[in-house]
Image 1 (cartoon, rainbow, N blue to C red):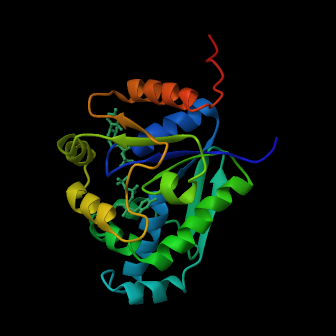
Image 2: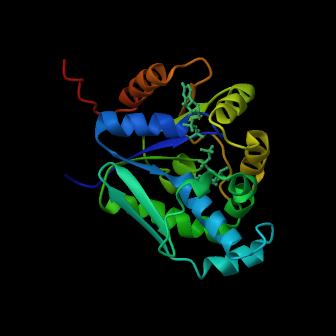
Length: 220
Ligand code: CDP
Ligand code: CDP
């Protein structure tokens, strides 16, 4: 087999990217990579180190002292930062409140995009984030932009028990200079507002087939 491929799933906060990517990974036997977890890990470490997440120069300096280790465990991806798996801390209200500022720092993006691309040295992946179809894997033909009504997204996120302002993150993620959130060239938009998880997966499989992905039929 020549080379590995990526399915790129992008979209705004709480649109259902992770849920869809996880289901697709299971159905297709691919490794699922949540790129947002990498940005969250750097943000968590910035705060652990007592660095001001609003100061881009200080964040870039702190990044020099971070060792990120990204791997694979079955179809899941794994992540440690300076030897620690931050676990649930990645979804704390503090990380939610600062991750978009840290993610806007160009040095942070350069380092994480390189790590994200290196997954293709070993595996086919479903990767979800904000710039996977535009910046990480612009050449892949398999691209889906998952959207949903802002009120639906905020409600789904709160129902999951998290403290998070999805509109603040969306604004920062769409307006930053480096690789802002936008619909990639060649991406198909999947509106998740009225979908169940299962019907969203079915629509995604139809889109991927139309984009040329060979998908084995499910065993009866
Ligand atoms: O909570 P949600 O799943 O919507 O967010 P996430 O995917 O965990 O991403 C958290 C934050 O990381 C985003 O709000 C972006 O600021 C940043 N991010 C990014 O800049 N680029 C990516 N490819 C993924 C995430
Ligand atoms: O990764 P992202 O922040 O885009 O969203 P998520 O964490 O996968 O999904 C946000 C919430 O929406 C989760 O609680 C899902 O169970 C729920 N949901 C979904 O993902 N897809 C649907 N069609 C309906 C609900």
